[in-house]
Image 1 (cartoon, rainbow, N blue to C red):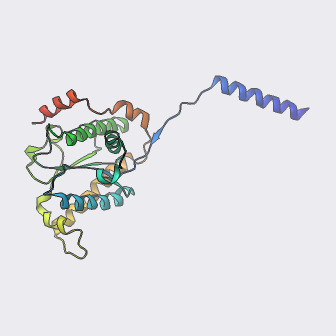
Image 2 (image 1 turned 90 degrees about the vertical axis):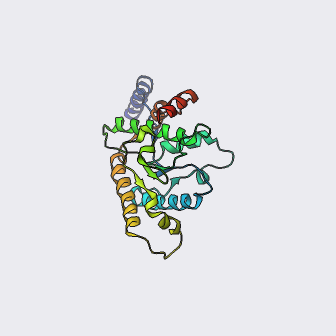
Image 3 (image 1 turned 120 degrees about the vertical axis):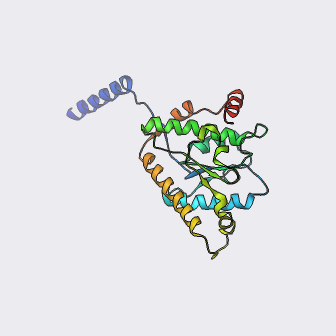
Length: 231
């Protein structure tokens, strides 16, 4: 009798809870990549780009324990929705490494602009969520050009010039090749800034559905207006 009573009581409690209580399911987002590698494809600099991607990947792994860098050639497979993969890659990366040259912003081929536009939105979103404006998602590296050439939206960012150690980057894939002190300082800088910013977000639980709702991909007219404002 006691057993039946307890059983009925548990069933009644479960029925009441099921019909009167509800859970809010949160789809927590996990960062997958240490960085999103943002660059303009150019046959003249392709070897530098590949080697630089590997350097970013190495330093990013030390800082974040994520051994993947989002690199379009490696992360987008045949049959994937290109647009969807790009925007998802930005929002699942701990940082956004931008390789700048004078033709970076181009209306005829606007993918770099699309990616940067989305990264700026995502950086703002993260700062608001963690309530810390010191967080930095975007790291510009200037391959060609001057600081004044940077898009206005990131003109105040700290930058590094790659031409100081272009030879080091070219030879970085050759085992045993000696490197300059400036190049070693550059790698240390990457590790330091990746680590500092990752510490600000690593313990925060981001809601993926909320990110998708608030960090939208740019519409064409919105993007063109933004591009015109960058000069």
